[in-house]
Image 1 (spheres, rainbow, N blue to C red):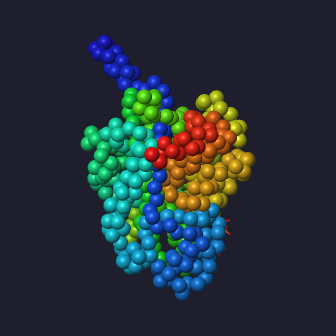
Image 2: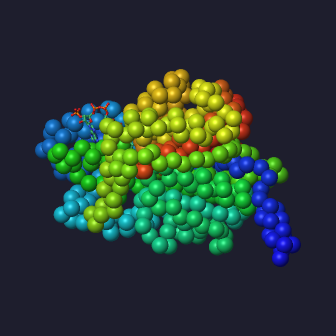
Image 3: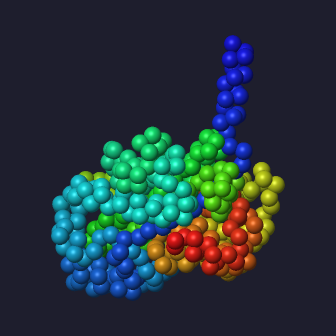
Length: 405
Ligand SMILES: CC(C)(COP(=O)(O)OP(=O)(O)OC[C@H]1O[C@@H](n2cnc3c(N)ncnc32)[C@H](O)[C@@H]1OP(=O)(O)O)[C@@H](O)C(=O)NCCC(=O)NCCSC(=O)CC(=O)O
């Protein structure tokens, strides 16, 4: 009996990886339909036949100026909305089924596009992927996006799949956290992580007095972000670590369960955000979460000595994190750029920020060795991940060339 249990320990120990999990490749994708934020109020009020609500449209214009978004990509075009008049008033004409039908194919296809880029950069065949972690808010099917990705990407039928639904904006960080544990506890594992979102589930017409709808239409964008995660990179297979995932933490901020929420209704998804309060709530909790994550590693609160990947929930949220941590103006530049170019893509956004940080490092931007990923979402939940930079600074041309071949 005793020797039996010793055996099991040995088996478990032998199965663990030696080194930390690392991101080995990143891929991102968006739908083709590009929407400039300056054009959005006209487009939205035209598509929803709401031109008569002149005051509300002016309000949306003012709101658009405040969010930090200049451009987004949306799967739903004016043409698609014209073809689905039932989307305009989800209370009178419930249309969850029609929206989910769109998501059924569009979400896996968008996810596959990001995954293909990540796999191409990784340089190994798709059949070498051992685990798949998929997360989305924009789907409710079984078999899910994970199962659909197997034939789309040519993964092995024996790939071990994990599907995370409805995690809000912390989904990307949560998926990377799960991937880290899988990679470190399964020697040789190569985990494909993908997060994909479509906002057609939230689409609805503007209603006088309903500010939340304006916010949901103006802030969020569609996209997919993928990463290959594995420990002990194999140089002979041309694997190279970009970021080591050093430690992870998750915390619920007490008393904030109503601050961000989402309900699946007969009509569509209905999101609620206590938008004016959320930046301050995050600001009040962020330092505690960071100390809890960093102190066990013997790292102090020298926030400007780190690089930062903060989920850009909106400009006000980034401003609040900036102010509380007294960050130098350039510290959240990657988060601000992604918000500006793509909008808030829920959990996808932190993967885009990771890619943007990598690009900046390759282009030679002076970057500290250690960094932090911070993501927020319903709960209020704060996900914190300590990162270690492996990207070689200033390798811009060579690395980008490798990705494009
Ligand atoms: C809502 C804000 C843009 C408001 O900015 P300011 O406070 O600077 O400006 P303000 O109060 O003058 O408001 C500007 C205009 O927006 C209107 N306004 C205020 N609150 C609003 C709301 N909830 N929805 C829509 N409009 C709103 C005001 O009436 C005003 O209109 P008028 O001009 O007529 O007076 C900002 O506070 C913000 O970005 N909050 C955080 C948003 C957020 O929570 N993002 C996280 C998304 S969720 C996420 O990322 C995670 C997840 O989903 O899981």
